[in-house]
Length: 462
Image 1: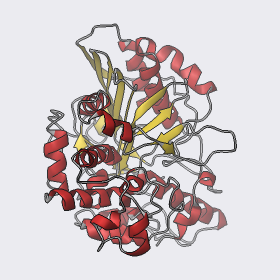
Image 2: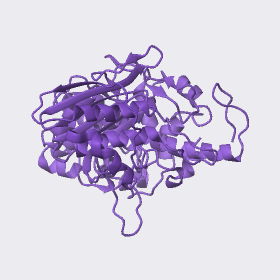
Image 3: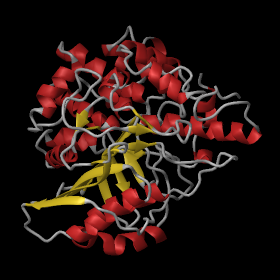
């Protein structure tokens, strides 16, 4: 394999270089499918930083100093900037650390808007379940009943709506084929496609032609599933899917800073969003301005951590769906293959997953990743304790010449912050680090796990 010469790398690659690219190919497909949270035990960098914070409406003490220290550790470990909200009942803490612009040193602010990637899928699933409640969509009906032209034949008759929403359809992901040359020269491919508009039907065609990591019936995360879900919404409602979700989910939740972008530019204050592509784009480049038609109802939305916390609290509290539909949403399948007798520590429902963090607690939510932007939102099952965080450097992980991941203090610090904020918001930075360091690896099955845990067939996608 040959890397196209660029500002970052060039020339003919060795056997070790080819192994590294194979690993990058695998984790790229996975990371663009969901997020960038690797399967590594948390162990944060202990260096202090300079987060800003605001605490409001406190009904119980939050450890503001501990939260600030843990958030700053994320920046000091190497993340450019992050902003976050932590909630425990009516108590709320908002914080920011690092930089929104690394050139001007503009500080990150807690109220900035951010691309939320695959967290969009939760909103899309809510909209589909609303239509299910009205009898317009049967979750166990084949998608071919609704979209026979797009998903014809045997697959259209076997893949159900439920299979789309919980990623057991066996349909491949369109992301790599939608960005020609991205594995050879990611910077060139991203620049060439920055303002390109892609129709959802074309994304579906690419996904249907792409290989899947798992056969039908087993969980294999694919953005194609949720582009199809958006087209399903359009078919049964007669309205544009993004417009329907805006009116019936976003506005119903009262969210003021959550939207599908109307252009490549974000409309509100936002950080620059830097893509490194595992060191193949060096220095990391800002991709905050991007036509998000390539993600659509699978990952195009913009929001803030505060809006996301409100959304998940309303959802888990039964305010956006009826009890029957929320139960369907929380009916899960294992998110990765386990050894005999082993219990999956991550399970995926309908646009919502449940995950066990290193300190032992189980939480509901989703994470998301697009070029330059990462987001993660988790809540207790009742929605009382919550954390949402957005950050602006993506695919910062590095691999050695054998394609094996190098130590990753950035993600260690991220997991420790999130775990501590949820497990013990009153003592966030005091016990989470030691508990996380001793715990088993966080089982993020879709995002950036070790290459040997992923289907390396992604390397063959051109």
